[in-house]
Image 1 (cartoon, rainbow, N blue to C red):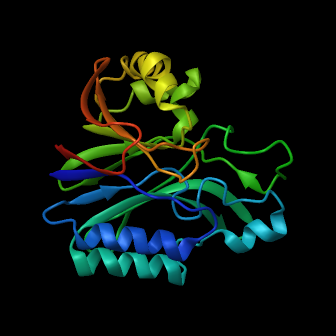
Image 2: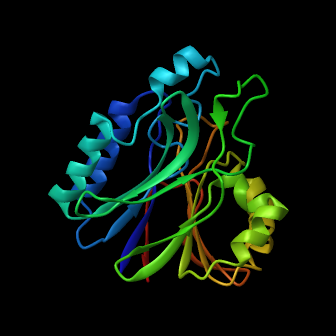
Length: 240
């Protein structure tokens, strides 16, 4: 199985742009089975206002027309996609990640379980998921964690119990490239070193020096075994 971890341009509250980005990546997917994008990629990491009346309009229903468009693209280009988005289910809002296979079927929907995605003014309608789960794609077994899920000790214990081939870890980090290489990369390696499977870190790119600088990594046993360096956009290829 061939997976592409995609560090691509992300614009806040511009879903048409984000869909076009995914479409263009799918066009050039060649023989990839799955392309993975970052946290909150569809609406952008700053795509929420924390005004519930506004945010419920920006959120996306898994069964809605925009998601149907994306499902159709996976069938056209015969390649699955994984991406983060703000999900609405009735009146509830979640920070979620969806995996759609090359047949346009939803094979995974994960809702972030840690609370760090919310501003303090968020109402009770902004919710977390209930736990981790696994899913199968092309005979390989995966799970998803979003950003701070891995940094919570309780949730890390749950992740340790998973029997999977790899963990998808879409996130948003805005460290400077200097800080990343001098300090934070080592911290991320140490944190994930206890997990008994590969971890696929996917970070988006924002055209702002103070925002996310992109970069994708594969971590294994406290080592980097695959890297698209921070500061670059592109695709990191992983063979599973």
